[in-house]
Each structure stands twice: as C-alpha cells, then as structure tokens.
Image 1 (spheres, rainbow, N blue to C red):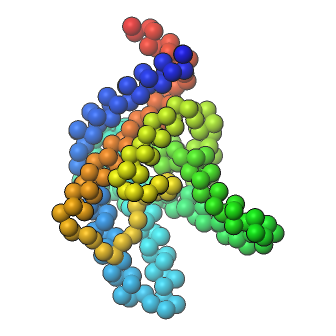
Image 2 (image 1 turned 180 degrees about the horizontal axis):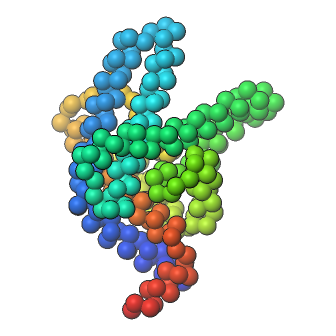
Image 3 (image 1 turned 90 degrees about the vertical axis):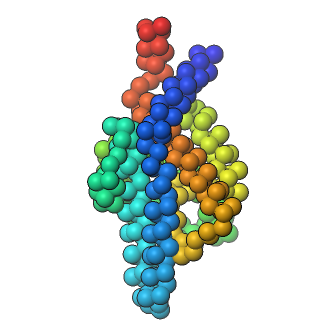
Amino acid sequence: MVILKDIFYLNKDTLKTTLDLLFKNWKIILMGFVYITINAILGIIINGLFIGVLRIIGGIILTLAMAAMTSNYLYLLQNIIRIERFTLQDVKDGFTALLRKVYGVLLIGWLASILYSMVLAPILGSIGSIIMMIVPVLVFVLLNPLPESIYLKYNDPWGTIVYAFEFIKENWLEWFVPNIVFLAALYFLSGRIILSLFMIRFSSTIDISVYSIFIYVIGQVVFSFVMIYRGVLFDSLSTSTRRKRIYMRDLYK
C-alpha cells in the first residue's frame, strides 16, 4: 500500500510539473519538423553524392548527424528540466553540447555489436540468432533511462550506461508504471512497438498529406509530453528515495 501511494503521488506531481513545462516550452513540439527537414536534406545529399565505396563516408556523416540531432534534442530537454526554458541560442548550441557523450554511447553500442558478431556469434551458432532477437529487448528494458542519464547526469559515456542500469535496478517499478502506458500510446499512434532508445530517424522523403501531417503533429505533442515527463520523473527518482518522498509529503501535509 505504501508503494502504491508513493507511485500515485509521485506521478501526480510529475504530471502537474510536466504539463506546466510543456505549456511554457510548447516550441519543443516544432523541433520535430526541424529534424525531419534536416533528415530529408541529408538523405538527398548522401544518396546523390556518396555512391559506391563513398557510402562508407556517407554512413559516417549520417551517424554524426544523428548524434548531433540527438544531442540537440536532449540539450533542449536539459534546459526545460533544469531552468524551465530554452532559447534560440540553446537550439544552436545543442547540436554540439552533448555530442561527445552521445557519440561515445553510440560507439560503445556499435563496438559491443561488432564484438558479438565477430567473437560470440560464431561460437553460439544457431542460438546466436535467438539471442540477437532478445538483446534489443533487454537493452531497451535495462537501459531505458539512458537518454535521461545522458542529459541529466554528468558522467562519461561508459559511466552514463552504468548509471542507467543502476537506476533501473533501484527504481524499476516507479519508472516502468508510467512508461508502459507511454509505450502503449506511442504504439497506438505509430502502429509499431518502439524499442529504440533514440528515436530520431533519417528519411529522404516527407509525406505532406493532410492526414499524415495531422498524425505527425499529434505524435510530436505526445512524444514531447512523454520525454518531458520522463525527464521530470527521472530527476525526482534520482535525487530522492521512497522513504524520503513519503517523509517529505507527511511533513508538509
């Protein structure tokens, strides 16, 4: 009963704060259009100029661009959570603000996949394909707060990954109760289960039909709400314990 009470009041406070922050920073919703425009332009340039062996260079550029846009979005979220606002200058600075950490985390993930493919997969044989299906789910669950760990905690890339794992060990129930609801909402809007911790994707085409634009806008509103909610919740859980939260609520009744 105590646990359920804590979860209820924790999410009640988080919801109130999230709605206030989203109202003050509604422009974060528009950033999705900025990223999809950059995606389309990059897609056209890469596909047109980098052909044959040059596709390797194109792939590196795409990876850096993805890391830069992820850095930008997480930096804006950092400002929203920390100081309740972001400016045009923050938008400009965001592309490099967290780039090193984001790229470092992506690099660790890439090296882990290479190590598995070259060393473990040949040993495991047919079982390896089954493991490859399970690993993305495990990563999504065990490192779910990785984006928040990147922009709200000051650790190196490896320390960021470790912190995300330790956070889930300590707060798995409080964290996943609302996040399962969010996952269901995003599935309803997108028609697919999203198991990617970084959901900025590259595309060379833009569907400009009225229906697609409407769904995209709704999706951006929901996604912005979810990401701010996660940030507020992460900040609360990482700076308190259940006992402390209950004590503080009883103290200020």
